[in-house]
Image 1 (cartoon, rainbow, N blue to C red):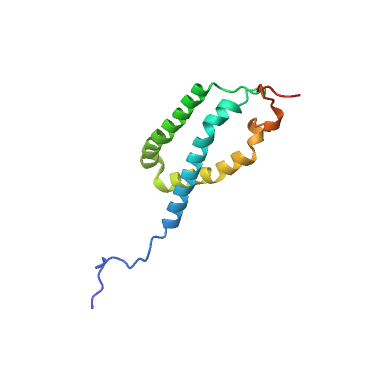
Image 2: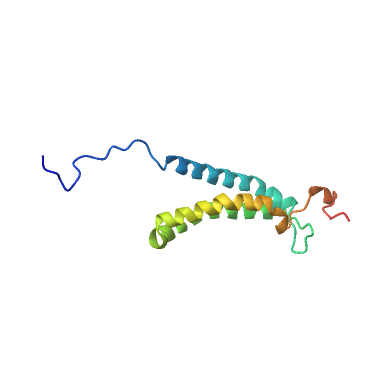
Length: 132
């Protein structure tokens, strides 16, 4: 029997080897998004600090507005990212960079949150001023 240069039938593949990675990445993205969305308005309206480290909460309407900007960015920026990834960077490089940022960014923000100005809630009195 003569050997053919091209395959005559599809290869016998069992299962999707990338499936667990795709599902894990999607779960991480959803947990990150819904976690940030759930605490963002409350944080800006009650716990945000100014550059001096003093409590400077926003009005609830203003905090709600910035939460909507966050949601808009979450839904709009993937379109821009798709254009950049498919047009210039290539799929594999873009996916690996985005996944590494997601994987390391959330724990880094949780562990090093005190560096960006988070304070313990017990240091504030009822009038939202720092107690000395």
